[in-house]
Amino acid sequence: MKDYYKILGVDKSASNDEIKKAFRKMAHQYHPDKTKNDPASGQKFKEASEAYSILSDEDKRKRYDTFGSAGVGAGSGSSGGASGSGGFNPNDFGGFDFSGFQQGSGGVEFDLGDIFGEFFGGGSRRQREQKRGRDISVDVTVSFEESVFGVEKDLLVTKSSPCLTCHGSGAAPGSGLESCRTCNGKGQIIESRRSFIGVFNTSRVCEACHGKGQVPKEKCQTCRGEGVVERTQEISVKIPAGIEDGQMIRLSGMGEAVAGGAAGDMYVRVHVRPHPQIRKEGSNLVTDLPIRLTQALLGGEINLKTVDGDLAVKIPEGSASGDVLRVKGRGVPNERGKRGDFLIRLSIDIPKKLSRDARRTIEGLRGEGL
Image (cartoon, rainbow, N blue to C red; front, side, top):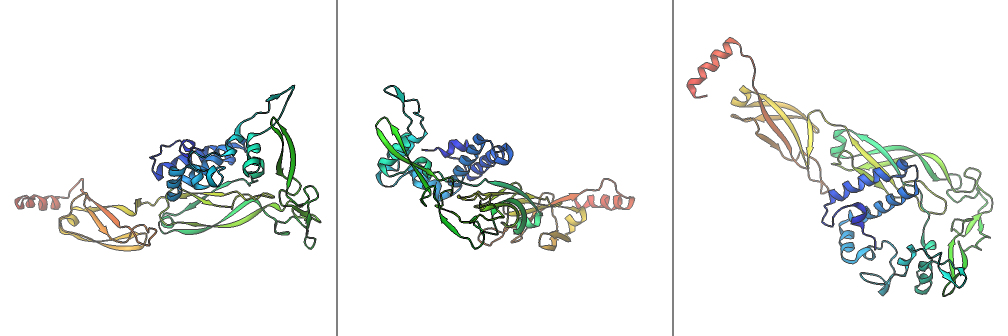
């Protein structure tokens, strides 16, 4: 069973934020765009993505903690009594290499995952592997106000996408498809393989039709029969309200397309431009407001710019540095449609120099106990 916590390098008691931070670190380190499609790094990125998809979902994480990978349909679990905690899974043998096993005077190649898969209906491990397009990552910058309320952004991305001429079929318009002669329309090639306990049939995806079982009668001239082409595509991304700088949004199936398989995913990293006066603290928006000594003593009213526009703020009499004024419902919206608060932290601006008249006036206040 895969240990998703170990893959991400976190404890089982890790919070959602810790899991998210660990995945971001691995995604940045092992992403194909960073590692020039290194197979080892690509495998680590794939495992990290799988682990994050389970552990970031509260329901899936509970089922994984209780039943293991079989509880979330991950890995290579099977149905019935062959799965679950402590159950026997024949496909777990697929990771061993017994190609050097000696029987008599010659070696016999076999894969225990393939052999036991034939016995228990699991099929060949190679048959179950699905071709998948590359994941891609893009960056988008939003204003502070857009990060508070959310926004929809249109991105221009150049990637492998389904051919618009043949709609991904690979066939020239009007020609259609025909049964693949290589696999006789099955999409799989059956091969007989000897093992130390007999002859077994295994299967692999047909390379001629990419597992579809059909090939173009006449190849599309645009994509040369592949069904995918490199083109620039406009993609709309919904930035949720309250997103933080550096957070990533996953768009499933919006990565690069591949012939005969599923498209990869797109990861959008969001960069938030800071506001000169306002910052986020959880669901609240916070600003620091310097006021004059007279305003602190006598009170007053100040116009303040917020993400909702101008706001008239009343300064109470006798305010002190560090006092916080709260304006309810002017903070960051949450998933339920409610908003946090707008917090105004006061600080008294004490003048360094006083005029002669101001000094005389303040000297007169000493008798008032001020």
